[in-house]
Length: 303
Ligand SMILES: [Zn+2]
Image (cartoon, rainbow, N blue to C red):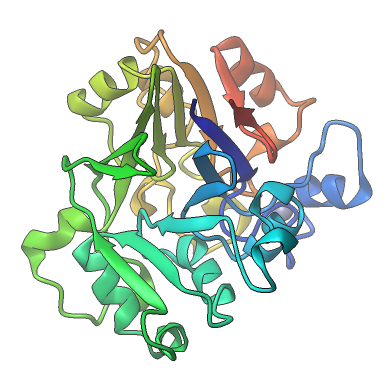
């Protein structure tokens, strides 16, 4: 049986964000009714007790491990151990990979990533901290549309998503034909469970709609409510679509574009601290719920 747990649900920066005094962040800091703090996006999957795979590794990973006993070492297994069997990386975005560096205490790790994500990480000298002892890091190369199996019972199939490499990797020479390996989504299947995990959705293709329609649960990019939300909060920052996120609202927004996807449980994740749906008293939050969506929260689980 597939066990899926969300350990964080916010976009990079979390909610509240350290340098933000907006009403949403203030509401979370002050514990106002309807405002819920969130760690940065993190998911974990398992089909066997004591064996977990992380989907990405957030900058909040240490808190997420210490806050969830399922991810903690067991004294019965000796002084040094972890139930974390591997980490699947869906992109090289800092918010998705910084947590890998936090797991550097000479612990052998298995990373599942595309060749491009691996190349980006290996080109960064910080990651040499993960190759200090033999076999500390094991890479498993994954590719779009090629299923791979975890613990004999979970099948993951990467889906190529549009999108580019993160800003910090802009000077790396990556073959243009490999851009489809920069950002992936995942179909996760075990037994009769089938879910899609797509925290970064720059465009909705017919293929993606068909995948969503075939799933029991879908986790979808809910970074922004509107295209201009970030820009209107911080002058000089880009529009949502310009940085690879379809906003929730609007004619061509996520809610409208996926209105024909009726089968699965639809959950928004990767919520930015500027998104008004973070206030459960807001009209935007009510709109999302009435449209049949749920706003993902830390601790959400399927088992
Ligand atoms: Zn804020």
